[in-house]
Picture 1 (cartoon, rainbow, N blue to C red):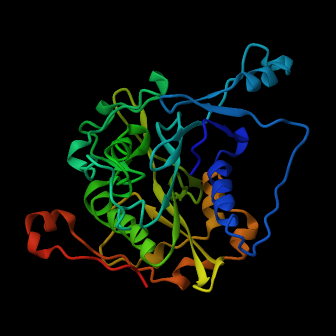
Picture 2 (cartoon, rainbow, N blue to C red):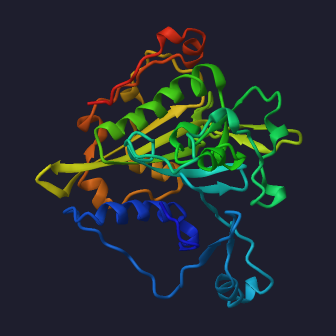
Length: 347
């Protein structure tokens, strides 16, 4: 994931920031997938500067470029992608919807605390109970999601990057509770159940793959009405209405592993996308019933996650491993500890 203080990105393709990061990270291992980069010499890409607090703003270089257009002599109205670089994830915040446009993670056994590595002296394991939901003060106040927006809304504060994926430190886990990482989700039957099973499946991929990249994307998909026309309708919560409720959520994964122990630099790449409705989903629903082509998600979200070369030369994740969720009623397990059991990696 990006960690530098200055990130170069095209304003019209914020998704390419992280998508390109994945391509670069995987390509660095010399896999045999041709990667082509298109350039536009007529327009210099803007620079998004990341401040101490994690907020993003257009640099003076971008302002100077905007002023070169007489129409924009008094400033560039945006949209400004708030690129948020955290300890365990990177996200782009959608100021209009008041939730992430996308979040991205790089999961490994080490990042999940399963590699056997010792923590620094005095640094105990992070505890979810020590984390609390907070407004993201790095964002302009008028564009923030507020705690009161979710009060009696009927929706859970749904993590886009789950706390269980951020076990690097207590600070990393705390950052997953910022409202800039949260979107309204149906609670029982979705956020607390099937969505949690999917998050668990993504983590278990690290048992079979050396590197797992996970993108979480709120979506607003059209529905065919009685008159035969397609419309996008969604709810707003808060008083006054402030936060939009996505109709669907997507998980897009890219997983890699060596083709064989003797060729560690030759990687097998697997990709897949799953789109789930923001609604109650039965526990017995097959995960493969939610499979959607990656490029369909890209079109729906207006993002560019993977290059055409990566998509053309990768296997589908469900052909590389089992696309089966493990049903664990976390609320029941808390009531009956004897029902808790270890979950093996999908094979």
